[in-house]
Image (cartoon, rainbow, N blue to C red; front, top):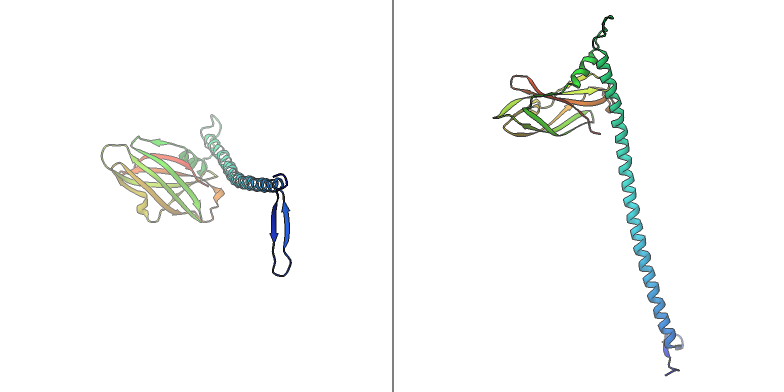
Length: 225
C-alpha cells in the first residue's frame, strides 16, 4: 500500500503518549545509515589498531637500530685502536742501520696479543666475553680434536687500548682447567683490574695449554658490549 507507514509510540508515566510515524522508505534509509556508520566505525578501529601496532614496531626497530649503531661505533673505535697497536708493534722491530729503539712493554704485549697459535688439537667456538660491574666473564665451547682425552689449563689475558696485556685470575681457579674427551663448556669469571673502565678494555686473549704447559691454542677475541 502506498500510504503505509510505521508508528513508533513513546510512552512515559508522567507524560502523554507520543506517536512518531515513519514511512518504510525512511525506515530503510535509517537502517542503512546505521549500518554504514557501524561499518565506518569498525574500519576506523581496524585502521587505528594497525597504525598503533605499526608505530610500536617502528619504534622498536628504531631502538634496535640505535643500539646497533652504537655498537658499530664502539667496534669501529676498537678496530682503530687495534690498527694503532699493530702499527706500534711493527715499528718496534729492527730499524736498519740506525740506532735500535728501546722496546716498550706494550709493544711486546701487542706482538703476543696478535700472534695466533693453533696446533690443531683444540678449537674454541661460541665465544662470549664482557666486562661488567668490575668483573670479566667469559664462556666458550672447548672441543678436543686430538685422539684420546686431554687435560690442561687456560690463561685469560685482558688486552687494553694501549696494547698491554693483564693476566686474569678466575675465582675459583678450577674454572680455568679442563679434562675432556671431546667437548666441554668453559665458563669463568674474574675480577677486572682495579680502576679499569669499559672503554679501556679492547679484547681478551685466550691461551689453551696442555698438561705440559705448552700453549696449543692462542687467539685474541673482541669483548661484547
